[in-house]
Length: 103
Image (cartoon, rainbow, N blue to C red; front, side, top):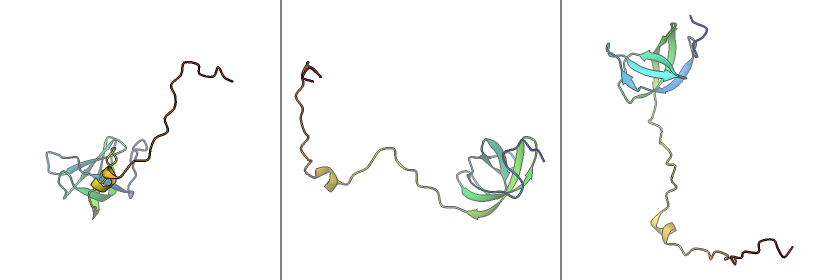
């Protein structure tokens, strides 16, 4: 076992299978470390248990299927009712060139 690897045998991680290798194993990453997982397909979200850690790669087995996480939008969404609600009046300030001169 390589002590430089960011994972250890027996650890449980939740991962997305990003691709499938030439032998049909799913490929996931934990902190950049490549893990091969049998019995999955690209796009699967699974809970895995690390079974073997080598110098550059590791192997894991599926211990549970997960629901695809809902990606939060960086934009706030509002309903049509909220959009059409009357807005509070904004306080308008006079634009002057003498900022701070009256102090």
